Length: 462
Image (cartoon, rainbow, N blue to C red):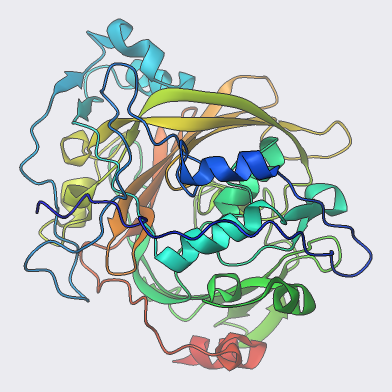
């Protein structure tokens, strides 16, 4: 395991300083200066994180993350925990909460207050395990001097494959980094979700997902992406329970959502028809979510950012779920994870990491169930780790938590489970349960023809 955390970016080439003229009628100016770009190969990582350790050493220096799979792993397996021998450093409970409040979000603190007898955090040593292919790092370096937001931040040009704004200037750039973070090119996955009642009873809902990401294709040009205006295509079919099996959803996500808004279709097994679904966006209820999440909660945040004003608040050190391989294990059954009030805290690993803090406040001339959202974004991956959500009374309403791992066969950092806690109903929804399902396939044979309305109809009938 001595090579698990070694630097995979020793041979990076220098950033190209030529600024490409923007496409169409938009002028693309370098988002950062030559001097700023040079930092991405010195004091900052290619993704814009601080390379150095924290002042007290509790957050180690970045050395490249996981660059090879643990011994015994083969593609298709649930992922072996590279850090299985790590011991709990300390445990936070409602009794000692005051000692650690500076490392927690208001929403996390509220969870301790809501479930004082059962909620806790086991904290482990910090492992900066996030890593990505060399071509993704290079693409990020290239994006850094050319990527630009258009349409008041609701579209993007001159970016491809990598993170568009590794040194973000504002909250909009930071949230686009999350939206466009690298997760592979063609992915299929099985799994599901559950929304336990207050007593802990639940019905498991199974899904088959397919994800085609043109933005992430190695070698794709920004000009090609702007011509098609497609970021990704997503198709989802319900596999269980039987009464809903065959219901399906298709989404085409666009780069410029003002030019062409998100396109969505649904297939209903009762009607045996495909229908356009323009309301699959913003605060429309998520699929079979019991009203416990919105559509734009999926993946912690997705879709057009145009209903909010975005502010980059800076960075802080925070305890977030990380390297949650134990929670991901196929040795677990869903009954061992899902409990009344919250998932089993014994299965969750927390670590101290630096996060970007981004605040989204609802614009006065728009509507949304959420008045304010605060996103805490892992600096090494641009994965949203925690989100605190406020209602129209300015009270904490929900808390979203992403439990991430490194899918080291790619490699990419992504959540293995997302949990949204509804503080008012004292319920939660857990999305991405895959312990009893086959593992993600990051080398799936998928084509554009698989993401048409006709394909959706065929998928639903199977």
